[in-house]
Image (cartoon, rainbow, N blue to C red; front, side, top):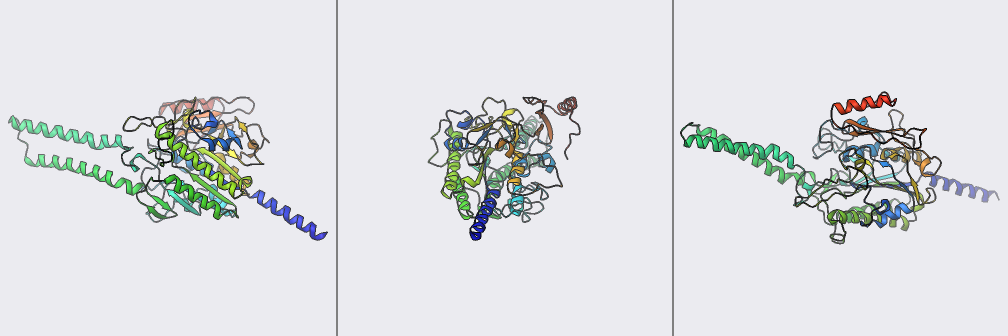
Length: 489
């Protein structure tokens, strides 16, 4: 009898230990709009696996990215903090990293949920896009690399997927080329023609060295442009496995299949231990790409093909969890780093942006379409299937949610802006813990979302564009609603 009792106690303890150490699969799309998945109302884009995920868990209808741009949004997702707190917020127009040689990135002092879970004995992996920097002082220090931020394994793109990475898709630097190369070349051409005409009319005799200088200057500008176009792709569009470059430049051939297969291998390798997998898709950021099984199959051109291929990948991951009988002990989260980039147009004039549904705006602005994103959680037996939550939540909330479920205390030496979502997801709370959510454009505060605890509905965001006057008016509005001490701490 005593032996049986001890055996029961051991089994109960083992079951409790397993339950207290759930696995985590975090699926992060890139530029995928809230109007794109079928579970959010789309009738023409086929997303059966994302919809399957939503049917089996909770769908958040007011899920918000902390920023409408890739780099700051992902920093907030990883750390549970507004990106201005960690310095991952630009004071200039360009708010993301465009070059692998950039010295910036997620500071080594920041704590990601991967670091917390690794300390709790989890195997951790990031497969896909990182976009939070590589090195600080030289190319070998890897201070911003995923493996320096708590991930045991990394396979993917350290920067981002750009049009310049795929030949024939145009360039994101078109404006820079025009201002720095084409306009100066036009001025040089006008100067040469003017001097030649004056010389022919015998009104002015410019020395030959002036003509030579202008020709050399034009040649230099053209040489720099051609050098940039030739070297940008191999220097910035490459795949890494941990800290080694494995493909330079990267090939888009079956890229989603390769990364998905690697994610499946990680799950199988770690089926007996708690794990954290962040599968960070390159889809549906431009340049769009898809394998032959998906190319030309959707009703929405190359964007739809890429979105449906990503949905296929989600299904593959869910199938592996079912195969390994891990679904009931795995929290799966699906979202996007910001809204769809509705202004994307190819060099041929094809519109390549997705859908943000009824919401105005898109990627790179703080209108609702730029920050309201899909948010889906599934954990069978813990989160009720078919649940819909209409409360303001943030991608920063993943940090404290994951940390608490893994048994890790939150860092006490810094402000954590995210809130644990499990009370909402399990029905133990009916309201979001966020009374205020701040919306930044790079370094600048654009809007405040107020969800008063004594009101049934939140106040809609107040958008006051323009600097510096817009920010001053916003500060006045903040004071009117009683919020003080807004800063960048």
